[in-house]
Every structure is written in C-alpha cells, then in structure tokens.
Amino acid sequence: DAINILDKNGKILFSKSVTEILIEHGYLKRIFSQQSHKTDPIHLNDIQPVLKDTKYFKKGDVFLSLRNLSMIILYRPSTNKIIKIIEGEFYNQHDVDILDESRISIYNNNVFLNYKSKRIVKNNEIVIYDFETNSFSKKFEKTFIQNDINSHSHGLVDFLQDGSAIVEDGMNGRIFYLSSEGEVIWIDR
Image (cartoon, rainbow, N blue to C red; front, side, top):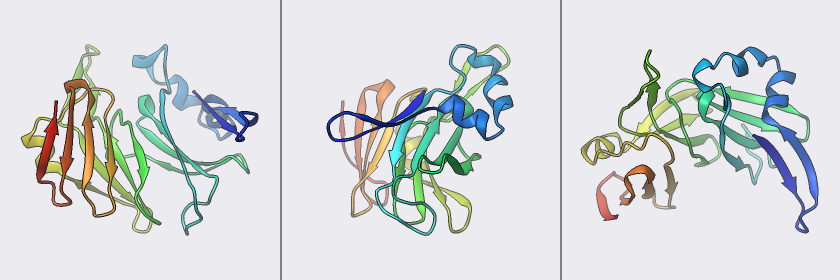
C-alpha cells in the first residue's frame, strides 16, 4: 500500500507508504483498529491522480481509496498533507473517479462484516461526493437493485461525457452500459 510517482523513463520521483501517511497525520489508531483485517488493514485499491487545479483539489494531488478503512483520502504529495478524508456513505469501496471540478464518484461495494466475520453484501452503489456541499448522493440506485449488481469486491464505473456509464460488476462477470438516466442499454457477460 504505497504511492509511487514515476517520470516518463520510469525513475521514481516520489514514494511513500499509505501507512506512513496515516501515522504522520495522527491516524495510527485507525490502522490497527481493524481486527477483521489483521493481514491487510488498509487495502489501497485505487489511486486517482488529479490532472488540473480546481477550487477543491490541485494538479498533482491523488485520491486514495482505502477499502478496509472505508475511507477516501485526498492527499497532496508535494506537501505531504492529507487535504481531506471522506468517510460516510460507503463500505469496502473500490473505484474513485473525478467527475468534475467539485465532485467525485465512489464505487461502493456496500459490504459489511457481521459478528461472525461473514460478509453481508447489499447491492453495490455509485456514491457521488460533492465537495461544494459536503454531501453524498447516489446514482443509478434503482438499476443496481433491479439488476442485482452486488460484487463483494472489485467493481468500477467509468462515466462518459454525456453522463452515461460503463459499470463493471466484476464478481458476477458482467459489464453494463447505462444511459445517463440509468437505463440498461446493454449487458456483456
């Protein structure tokens, strides 16, 4: 679980473990409080680089999806600062993507562990976090329920310019193409 920034020739320009980042920012307790994930307390499963400056994030920042902490971190390698920690409407999430200058999408696997460490999987969700309003909303919720999109791990969404999306339901071996309103245009199995 580390961030490595390489130049075009493969030379490492920056390298830092997520554990170091969390400890340096006072989150040691969060790393070691995950008793159900003793061998993998963090599980960095996506890094989304920021490619242009906005009011809420800067070029060179990275969004880190930490699955086993159910946490998204906006981190600035140039200053070694956590800019924002996003927690809340998602559990054991995967893919994080920048939608526009103030919003990100999070592929929420929506997985809980019960007292017997058994995974309880609800339907997956696309959660939208808005930096401007500091709020969450959901996209395609009805479509995910109707089509039983419920991978307990993996999964991603890629939005197209018109608001339509490609959704990977990895554990069920399906890819969906959805209109911007959530209508299923096609499914590939």
